[in-house]
Image (cartoon, rainbow, N blue to C red):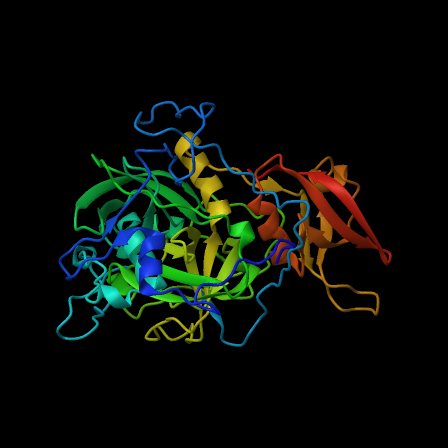
Length: 487
């Protein structure tokens, strides 16, 4: 939450009429399933970057990239000084699992899953087909319909395969010439493959082959490039730092291989932090700023739509901590990399994980939507995408200390992240922090445990400067810290 006045929530006290909704989005809705929504854009009037933001003369295109769009500088991800945000780490709940949202079938010998006997199988990459947003009665178009019609051309279905595994996910178009943002676990099939075959299906039914531009397993984000793509429709990104709990949230993606599926709900929580297994191809992760051997409080599962699940991670398996937007919009395996949108059809997050109650020890149990889904905030996604396209890699902050949750061993214990081993000449040491200090606030966000602190440190780029509040001997102190670079 912020000190800024809250924006009116669409459909609350003054619901829009269909005419007002259509006028606000300048959208001409199709009258049949075969018609393609026509959305007016301002691309010809005002040049924009890959995220729909206005361009400036000081933003040159990166070396080796196309010349039909200008590169956008990475946004400042530090929270404004006036922002007071709340944070709450997802608690440990019996039988709760956070699962990646890749759909399809992984590995040989897994039984195929299908919606019904009359529906195509969702387990094969070749089953991903275009299905436009259908509007039969333009007089009753609502906000969700308008958002779906406007954003649909900017969301794609991604089919990833190798000789022994396959799966489907979603992606968001960044540029007219085919840069697409998705999750690392979509293009690596949960860390199983490093050289995937990728096919992308656009909303209008075009098929493209694609290659990986770069992956960032720390944030579970990746950028791919479509071959010979032209005149695609880039998504418009919103400012995720200005979100409020209760705002409209609309998800578009390919859950269970069903392309262009639209669901809606609200933003149910902000500044959550979750810990999941890394989707990096082996030997490309780091355990810095974490407790060695500490397992995630969640069972991470690769749910592939075929009833097969990865076994719970072991203590030695690498984990990542993600800052996320929580939503109750229905998202399922296959929604990974797809868009979470606000009522203005702006991307506010990249769908990444769901919480499920299925048994992690029962391979026949399908993890699906229970009303708790997570998306990577749009501001973080923008920064990572910019860096991946420009440099092929992304940067993350490093505090220079191992951290753990605070144990309630005495009456003076406070909620936060306890620093253990502090690296000499690291960011924490240079800011005067010591082993035993308890961090309670970082970059304006309340810290409730180790996962919170690690996620928020990783949210910022290497070299970022921000404020950190810690408690030592019952006294609270705020210092400025300049983060190092995670290697």
